[in-house]
Length: 401
Image 1 (spheres, rainbow, N blue to C red):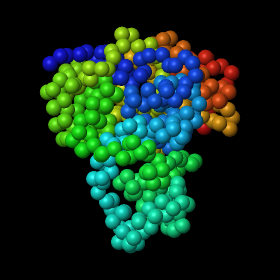
Image 2: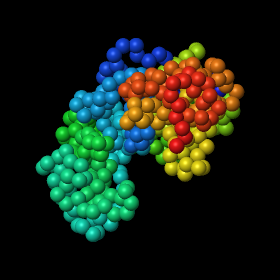
Image 3: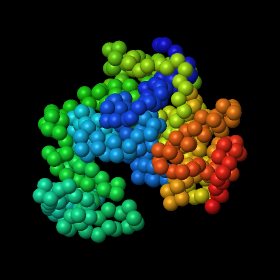
Image 4: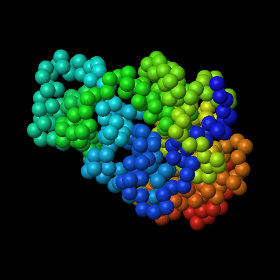
């Protein structure tokens, strides 16, 4: 079994994700987006809007400044993407739709769906008929949506029915309005060549999804690859063993890793990555916290739900990539009312030199602010990188309030 060192593993991971090469120099268009989506395979969707929503930030880290309507045009107008449960809620390349049909067909009823069917017999089918007649619709558009129960995330019966119909493939996501899903029948959303294609049987779908995950990860353990598209680990191990046996994937040993890993032969190994990028918490490079610690030696936890006095780093902290290392973490917030990109805190990783980290971080923060249409960057006092960053942005200062 070939052994690779940790630096090569990091470069494989970054090369696979398109983070080891320069961003596009000209206008970013749908062709760039389509190539990137084929490369990363899944773009996780998240509602947190502290800076910009995660799916847009993941694109920015790779494509740089671009029109944020590009994603929605590709999804809603060109139908190059569809939404489903890939790695959590995700935008996925439309050509992969048949790979997820087995997941839709084999979905078991949720507890709340069983309860809905007992308490309101026939309701789910009536919702489906209504969408056929008037779609696309949101939950609030239904003629009989029911009342929300519980806290703000509590679903009314209309939302339960719509989500169940979506999960089972009887509805699809036509678009979003104010980030809320709008549902329609698949015939009006999914292009016929993909909707009418035979569903890929589960074993073959697992095989192909794991190969896609291997291309997107560069080097990864069986658990890493299973996690990318949420494939059961036992099934993933069997499929990966077969892929290694036939030589489609290479089984390798990685310096410091307890488990063997798999390498896809098509993934490039950059010689000296020089990219700088801020990565959102739901970026494919860092969404698997166990893997990011193994690959980059970077212990990461998102603290959105941690009470403020107990936060160590901040509310919405972005790892900062420089070359082939995660060298810092930066708490960032967009204050749109004042036109400011706020940096309440910034922290350098152990062993890194501020003189090397600060100039590219300043450039990346300025780039981010410009893309968001914000006028200035303001820096707080929290963290060991705050003083040199504040000297780089001397005209404005933000308190920790």
